[in-house]
Length: 248
Ligand code: NAI
Image (cartoon, rainbow, N blue to C red; front, side):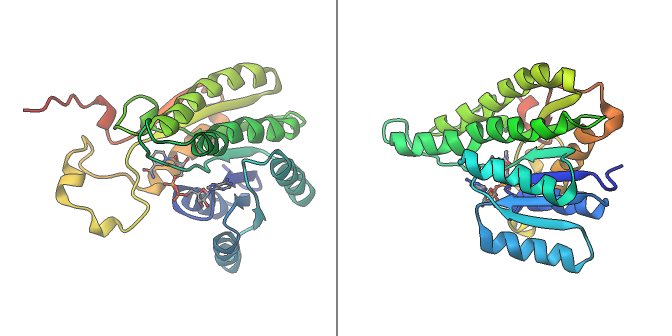
């Protein structure tokens, strides 16, 4: 399905991004890992290379337009084109709305949302040259739709990604570029074995999510055969946003 496809994953040095990048690499894609964390990025890409996969790490700060332009042009120089972009890089800064500084606010917006626009636009400039266009998937969150206190900046970016997704799906449609997003629920990127029974049980699925759940969702949304699917938000949350919760 993804043999020889050129896939860019942002925020690929750890967590969900690392798993997504690894899965595409295992599937035979050429994978560009982009991350601000150079040390970890090099480590992850070296490990994948040692397993025989076609990967390349490009240090990238997705807040910087010039870095993103460089990421796309270097990817094309190296692998000839771009087929798939996974906009995964993101930060979470829970701070009371009374206390959050505008610098932190702007940083969250620039990292999580503005970056999705810049990366999508710069990748699409190359994807539109492909006969089959391309596919873009961005990580939103169930926090686009429901909240805990002190999460305004994060929620705003994730809601923004859902809206940006259908807007870009419309603009890029003539170029055969599909644009979708995923809203993960609780995806454990730390030690899964340390989770409590109640962590799992509260989900309809009976378990907390894993990065591999998100990798499979990326596969679905970027499979050429699924070209009837564009502009959507795919919730992958073990049912948590469908659960009615009234306190006793
Ligand atoms: P993480 O914090 O483990 O990894 C994020 C990666 O993004 C890191 O490697 C980090 O270095 C990179 N990054 C941060 N700022 C960057 C920048 N300016 N330029 C380039 N790279 C940058 O996060 P996790 O948990 O793997 O989440 C990945 C995505 O999924 C994020 O967008 C997050 O908001 C979203 N998400 C995660 C959920 C979860 O439960 N883990 C739930 C819902 C959404």
